[in-house]
Every structure is written in C-alpha cells, then in structure tokens.
Length: 80
Image (cartoon, rainbow, N blue to C red; front, side):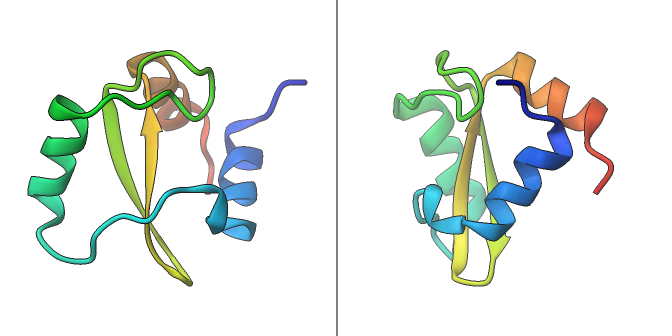
C-alpha cells in the first residue's frame, strides 16, 4: 500500500505516539547526535535513516527519521 506525503503527515499528526519522543531543549545538538551517532530505520521505507527531523506535536516533540530519498520525497510532495 502506498501512502501520499500528505497522508503520511496526516497519520503522524493524528497518531504522534507512533514516533519516538524528541527533546524539547538543545534540539540542534540532539539532531546531530541522532543523525551521526545513532542507527535508526527510515520511517517510510525502512532503510538506514540519515535525516532526523523533529515534529512539534500536541504531546511534545517527536522524532521523524528518514533516509535521504524519503526526505526528498516528503519535501517534494507534501502540500500541508
């Protein structure tokens, strides 16, 4: 089943508990640690994630880990 970029963003907004918690302070340093020092799968395709994004949700900051291709896909196709 394929998901559109907007569909993925809608799902993450509706169910932020699907994403791991991210820190509320020193976010830039935390992003660097997560990208370079930790190993996480891409949320969309399961490949090795090289991009760590932070989603600001109703329950606090959450990690969105994506590979390079899925990050570009999201940026190119998201309308919201």
